[in-house]
Image (cartoon, rainbow, N blue to C red; front, side, top):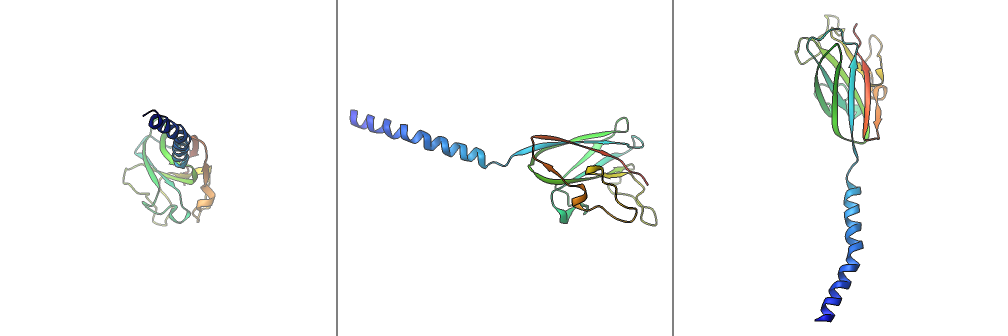
Length: 155
């Protein structure tokens, strides 16, 4: 009986480092995630909402409803703030527009110019006849919390 107890004790003691290593590996295998705080200023009024798209791929950037995550933000004092949570570390870009009439889509003039305010991460300002590319607005999330501040553009 004593030999069995001694043998089980030895097996148990030698298995602790293996168990601890397995637990550590499982924790390390989890992707690191963070929070992206969004602050949008320069909104011309408090009407409507600000619709924000967080993109994680160049080929889906600015394609309707192809964002990675989205937010609808209320406006107060001509400013909108919101938070994306549990976002895996990586490269992202943000695009937003001020949906003044809550139509759920950007309104354009008869010649194709935006009638509502818009903006991008890095405060990228596209040319009059061009759209930004993912690379123009991209940023890296590599800490547990980052804040992206953007200004609204109106034509």
